[in-house]
Image 1 (cartoon, rainbow, N blue to C red):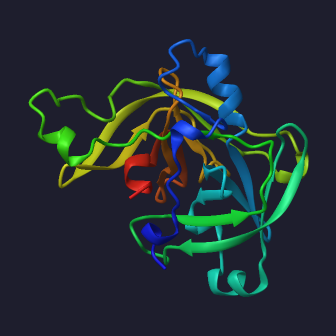
Image 2 (tube, helix red, strand yellow):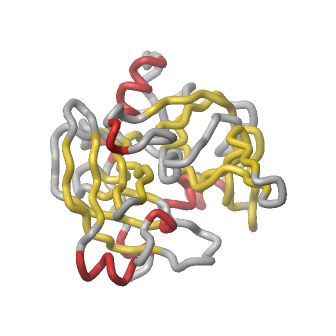
Length: 239
């Protein structure tokens, strides 16, 4: 299978579990509340990270491949678990449907677990189709520099503390393109260990903008720069 085969695109208009970006009355509290119920902790042995619910009906979670240490062994032994705190601490075994290999530029994996009514998913920000792009009125960029965002993930604190996901604010600072396709979003929200696979969320529309993959490190100085971090855009994730 490849990523295109295993990601299931849902009908946003018929699913009440999805928060829609056209709800202009959404407050920041509404956005954060739903975002917290759309992110899970991904457990693999002693390693943990975050994951984003991309299809709430089919219980599909996008996360980072580097969280899954030995993917061939994981597929055989089913050693991956997802857990969340919305509203109570719950844990389910997860199946690895797809994971990119080490060294692949796209750090991505897709998990599936048992249905649960507590979780939600954010509407993803996706690009225009070919007909829209040919329209003379089409000039709106998909992602905007300076857009206010938040990052939701299980960062810094050990899973054993059971304190739930954290929310940190920032803004989109840079957007990288390849063949006119957004391939990388840089934001200023503080990202630390454990946030990989977390959600990058627009605080203006409530949409899911991307999945966190890393912050910046300087191996020579043994330093990290949490306010310089990168995400895979949703428009690329869902292709």
